[in-house]
Amino acid sequence: MSEVVAMAGQAYMRQLQAHPLRTKAITSGVLAGCSDAVAQKISGVPKLQLRRLLLIALYGFAYAGPFGHFLHKLMDKFFKGKKGKETTAKKVLVEQLTASPWNNMMFMMYFGLVVEGRPFGQVKNKVKKDYASVQLTAWRFWPIVSWINYEYMPLQLRVLFHSFVASCWAVFLNLKAARSIANTKKA
Image 1 (cartoon, rainbow, N blue to C red):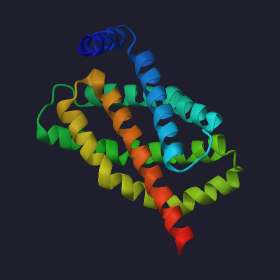
Image 2: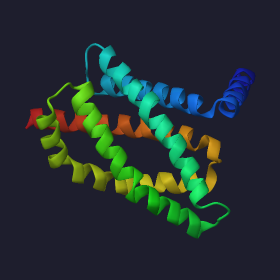
Image 3: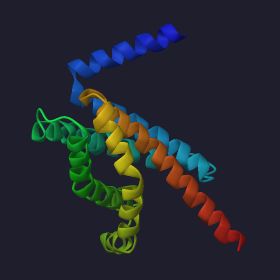
């Protein structure tokens, strides 16, 4: 079994070297789809909503993976040759003040408009109501992830690491939402 895992890891790294953008996009899409499947099951959905899963996977493939690919390339160019904890802190700060708010806004809009199919006015109101809370929650968690990513992950694995953690984060948020809904029904 460990030989199979090692071979799969080597094949993945070859694809990452030969086709970095494509590999990161596919990886992000697969992880996003898998996390949505788990999240749906945790939230108590009796039958897997395939359309939703595919739309979340599409978001990972078409947006999150490519965005992460170019973000990390840009950050490495911007901080070219600079190393150390101070540089890592600056990268985290730049990411958290630019990419994090943007990505949260993009996901909230995509989820409301595309996944849920709600009208723009409703989505806009939901974003107005929930965005600050979402962003403040993100700032409690994601700077740690970003620190680990910039400090310990090689450039080619940063999108994979981020996508994996994002998948776990999505499952956690859905579990929290499911518990919140269950507690509301009990009260």
